Length: 308
Ligand code: RIB
Image (cartoon, rainbow, N blue to C red; front, side, top):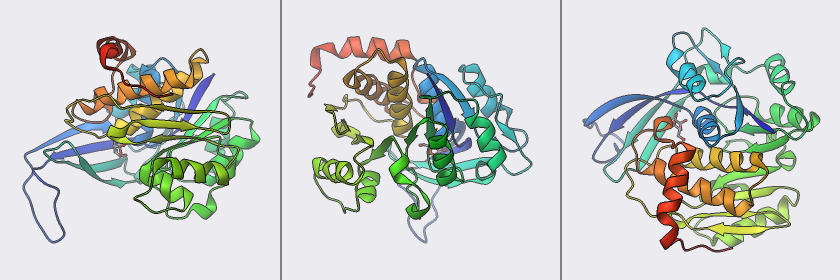
């Protein structure tokens, strides 16, 4: 079982600031660093570092060998990445003194996936393989319909949340990976609201889908018609929360691919990986290897407070 990830590839320009810039304000950044990023790239790296077999599908512009090379050196299959003359996607990321972020993404080449390319990638899959999507590339609805026709297992992380959900056949998605805001919006509810009510509503509306609701420092919950499972977050000092959700997503899916793990184990490894990522700077470079996650879990054995 492998993952076909239709995902963004971004150059992340990370500005360290004391506080996020406000409307009409100009501030000085304390530092600027440039990293590989993009929700798609980050999720491919996380899944591959967790041991999954990953084919990355996406598009870049000229002179971005460091993005493709970074994926390749992490054992992600990059043979099908499309080269274009459009500008590569990029993100302007402010990270404040509490490690929280604020992000603007410019899509660029990420928006150039066409029908022939989508079909070519889907033909690389076999029945039951995972097709993973975020919302930083184009043609999401088309990819979901086509992936369904190919008998693939569709995982959708609707981030950033789509402005127009009407073009997306939500009922064909097998598994949603959402944070609290995305989950509530998908359910048609407004925050603040109890997490259980978000999941109750989602399951009622989309009974054939499963949901992974990530709650930051409050942990994560998996819910399907057959199963409900929770895991607390591991407490760490936040340095930079960028890509924590992507790390969680990639690790969780790698766990599913292994077929030997319970949902609880998948949540546990994903929570540990996300905690490590939060304790480090940057997006993709902060994603831990599987052996780091394993050691972290051993070190936490004494204080695991878990719910099932
Ligand atoms: O989720 C983090 C990612 O969001 C960053 O790497 C940035 O590129 C944006 O896509």
